[in-house]
Length: 244
Image (cartoon, rainbow, N blue to C red; front, top):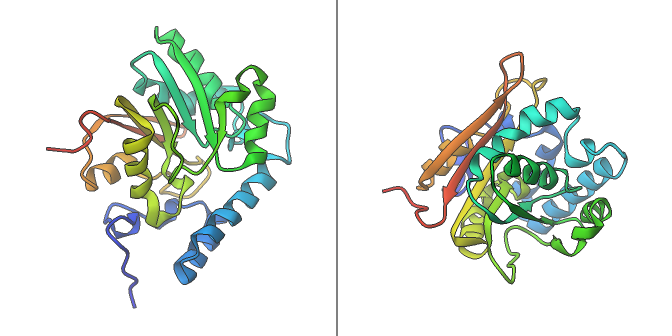
């Protein structure tokens, strides 16, 4: 019997291929489908990420990739194409803070001054960012991107859909636009993959957002030398979030 998914679940979209999900997270997805226990999903994912990130001193692995400096820049620099303004930036799922640092530097090269802030749902992983950037420690917050509300909203917010369970992807976008992104701000949505993973490798974020009725203001991507697309970026302007 074919399982039916709700309209907010990307698995209900013809454009979505479940093969883009990292193999390590699929058992947690299956458990959630069977039990509906969302808290257990977050606990299991948190434990797995802490085990991986805290087991190394390598800054790239602590940020969720096995890249070296050159590959990191090639695969993450497309994100900065979405930053077209000065202001406060929130990196959702900030890990050790490396992406905040590099995006701030790359934005400066383009003439934009960014004040970086971070959010992570693991206190132990957030501590890596506070240790790496003690001068910014107070800007690194603990929270869940489905519910966290800042005292002041951000001009730019960057996130990945995969920080929440599949059935909550759309809810995360709605919450960030309603409570975290400033009224004239921008939400940047990213998906990362691996050139070594069998195709497909990255979630079709722009197509997913459009399928949910959002007006995608722009897109960018990164490709490995072998031609494999490993980063997709799409962004929504909070002032005009809906298509039509």
